[in-house]
Length: 234
Image (tube, rainbow, N blue to C red; front, side):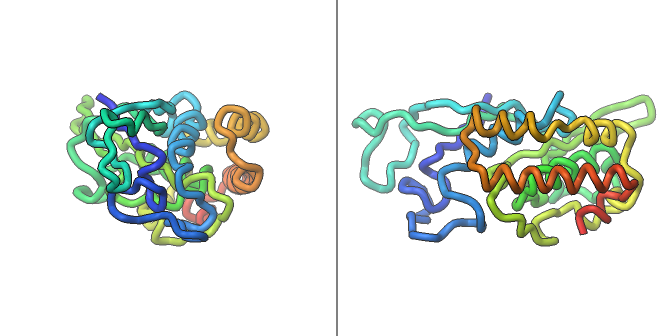
């Protein structure tokens, strides 16, 4: 089972099913171009080296379905509407989202990996609903793992993230030392290699790549200095 997000149904694109029609200069977030979210969904997966942060497998795909939106014109795939380009992501079964749980039940590594991902990508849309929580049984009892989804607003050309964009900012785990595994992960980031991949595989523009360089360097420098994720984020 997978989740498909058509690029032309994103907010402020021509076939958005909720009526958010294209308008010059209007977008959901500054530094984001409507219709490019699918590329950023894929980028988040590709940048999550070895799946440390848990981004589900994601790729670009063309798909056809009778329920796709064609801007209220009455078109369908069967009547010539055609296939659509979008992001295709593995569906992840979960018992809850962070809307349903207290941060206190989340292990330190699981909480911190989300912050590392969002700081690196300067994610402008990390709310409780796009953190899926799954139970895992261990010898010491039941624990929770987190799966981050919805990465259409990463890699923007602006770095204007606010406190309300990062649901994890005030979690107590952010003021604890970074776990050894995540420290090694951050210090292994090859920014130049990442930028080359983003440009060649996904045509991410130079301005967005510049912001990515800056956010990665901020994260790496903070970790080298022994700062907590809270200190880096604020």
